Image (tube, rainbow, N blue to C red; front, side, top):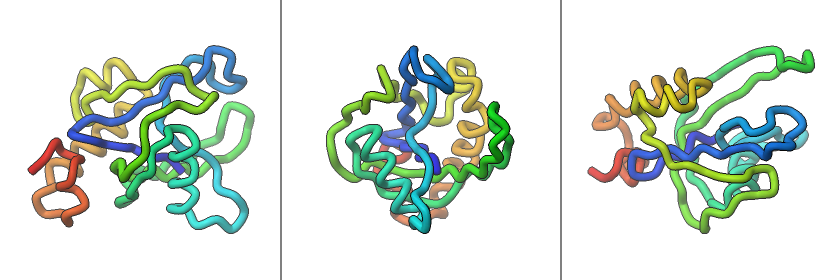
Length: 144
């Protein structure tokens, strides 16, 4: 599970530690594995809180990716559109820095090319926000 956390039109990205075993120094979004039998949204909230100090509200899934990880493990990743719902941003020991980047800008895609499809998915959702529930109008797009 991954959380694409958006506040005032900006998405939260985290940089992994330079000595991270899997992907040292790379940018990522909050998330992680579910515990056995854990509800996906509850697991997402747990991971986001542990990695960022933020409580989140989870909206719809905006990405579903199935791939084989570098170590041969098959992964199914669901990315949820989220917004902060409390707490104070503080990084876990897994990360060294954070950046709030424009959630739908091409410049974000260039800076963080791994997230280009996600930024494009968000931009597509954003373009339809006026038709979506109130959840999306409270901070995701920078106000009404």
